[in-house]
Length: 280
Image (cartoon, rainbow, N blue to C red; front, side):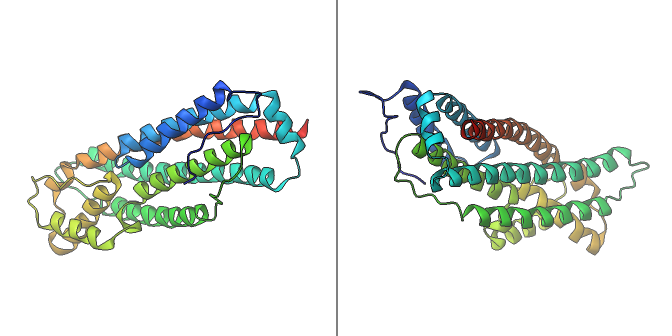
């Protein structure tokens, strides 16, 4: 993470108010990102990141910054910023894709639950499809996390170059947290996952599962335990019917996806502004 430092936009005496606003928002974002341990806190961090890009858009409207960018059209740092903006768009798109895929599979499971008749229940195929989708999603997430490590987080620049690089570095940090949360425990500790799975398999059907840091993790473990139990002694209907986790997760996905969509639009706007400045 880039270190905090005072900066100026080469104005005669004091820093420009928009530069101060950017630094304040960056500090606020660092604080919220460090405390992001749940879906709600991650969503707030993403909202703060969106606000940071509002400041970036304001900075790019300043004539002096536009001159700096245009005069450095062929410089390495401008190329890095442009390349970074494209990669951030891809990263945001991948995040939304895995969320939508998980949501669709969850809806399939709940649809079967609503359509069941005469007490019969068979959601084995839907659960298997969900777990397969999650496996694919985790592969995508791991690739994204690997790609993010290739971002150059060093920043010894000043002015608009420093701010653009700081914004991209912070974006990488935020999306690392978001993707790790979506990916669940498999990206961090398989031991913890199997501990949770064993507890789920041995608890009574009317007993709620332990709270976990990630609703994705909780649903993954619950559905895997259902598959294991079905293979041993048949489907535990009561356990499935009491799975409020799925509804909670679907709500989480909806909120995160809406915030990511808004952030994606800001990424597009920032990149378009940069390209317009450099082409004029």
